[in-house]
Amino acid sequence: MAVARPLQVKSVQDGDRAVLTLIGELDIATVPRLQDAIDAALGAKPRQLVVDLRRLGFLDSSGLRQVIVLADRAAEEGWELILVRPEKAVLSVFQITRAEENLPFVDEPPA
Image 1 (cartoon, rainbow, N blue to C red):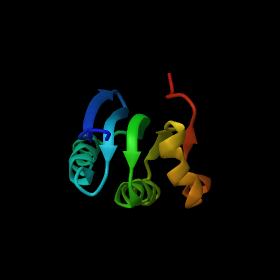
Image 2 (image 1 turned 90 degrees about the vertical axis):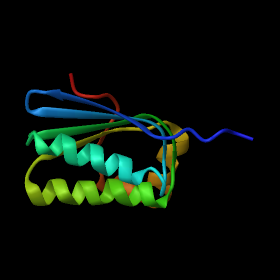
Image 3 (image 1 turned 60 degrees about the horizontal axis):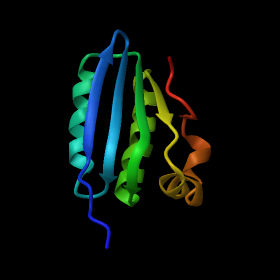
């Protein structure tokens, strides 16, 4: 049986860009940790928020909802959201729900 990995969020501010790297599992128990990191990153008023999902090992429906809400927030508030495409197992959640079609995924983080 696999051992659950709690979510770690690494945050870096780089001028007008904030980068959040998610490591572990994004689920109902860890969504609040991500929300806190998002609020802290957006507090600096970046023009761009990059969320790197490549090291995410699991995503449930509450994590999916958090990402969709974040995309809506970016559109409403006028900053750019960039999602770095996760590994296949996590990406499949976005594909099955067709959310991938409406989210700003890239294969590599911006330089």
